[in-house]
Image 1 (tube, one colour):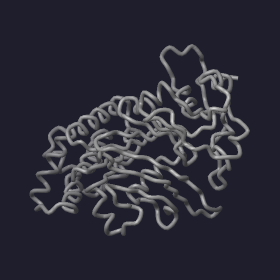
Image 2 (cartoon, one colour):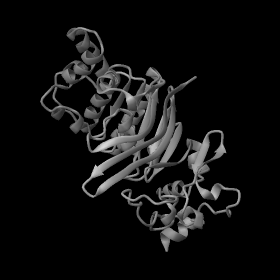
Image 3 (cartoon, helix red, strand yellow):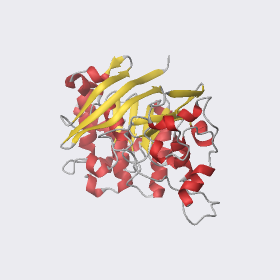
Length: 339
């Protein structure tokens, strides 16, 4: 059995001065050993909240897990004490955050920061931790690691800092690495280097990766499976080929249609019209219905269940019901986006 992580019906809410925001609404997903699962969707879809829930890093007491299970190797992370979670964070599950500058302590050398992770979770001496830290800096492709070990974050470029953050995340050989928009703050050339580095490290260490991103180009290059999120729900999940070449949910089709292509003749990019629903008061039916060019009457009143398209492909859409009318997967978006 290769299943490393299983999330079942996860619900996460935020208490605000205007009411309860239902940020994650019944998310279920699985992660196998050694695979890369990408979670994609526009800003506010619940990607980062879902990923932080896996490590219990939600801001307390404002956010809380209301329902569901997060099974890591059979243990429900949602029910563990904070002390038990401290043994898992960094050692079993690690996370790379969006901005490396805010992830690093500006008053400490990068070497000492990596040392701290090692000393927290492994019974080694300070000298052994320092040696391991230098090895990690070399592993992530930082030249002159002995010199860089003694430097502060501000003495490094953005790409170097991101490599340091990755070294910290890998310090204890975690079984799961969560990468939350790991290349957002980097230029295109450095982005490619960081993604190549993550791929290479995964091959060497066998770590499973959860990649949180809105960049479908990154997904195509990195992921083996993709989960598409919208309004706090996973609306479609499948292999990379299934999502890119056989999308079934109108939202997925809209995301793909909005990608710029080299052969595009139109001056205007396609866009998904409208805005996501207000999660203070989520819609009764499909969250995407108000923006969908193919919406049926039932879409406005009832939540669709995940419907099976293949052994590896599912989508939550009433249009997949055998009684629903057939849809064209491109014309609807072209008409709604360019008129």
